Image (cartoon, rainbow, N blue to C red; front, side, top):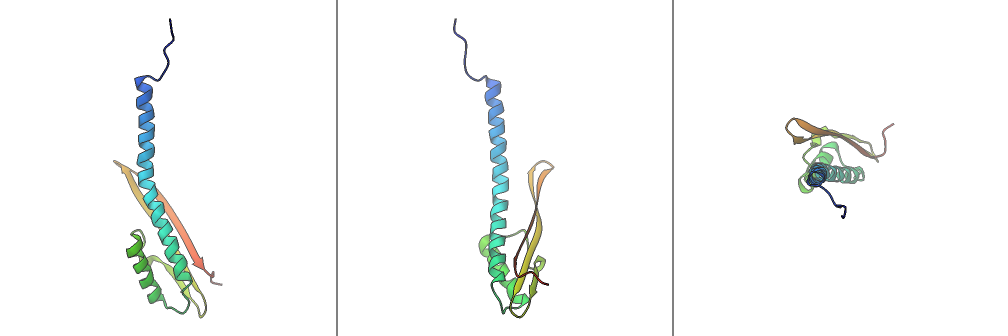
Length: 118
């Protein structure tokens, strides 16, 4: 008599449950990190713009936000310090992503670029 080999139905269902949860999590988390990459790109670009005022830099961030799909942080929430020859920009924000029912993931992001003010 030969021994049976392979997975049982319960094992296959359990593996499918784990894989499905992984896909759900990846589908919720990847867009958040893509948006964070766009915020970092916008902040870095703004820090290289010397000679512009606070209002112009916020307008430039708003343009980056519209093109890059940034919705978690508004130009009013940026910390911008301009001096004669340097610009410091900091974006700190929190993003909550609902998973299911009343369960959510919370992400705290903080990025800065430019010369740190003394």
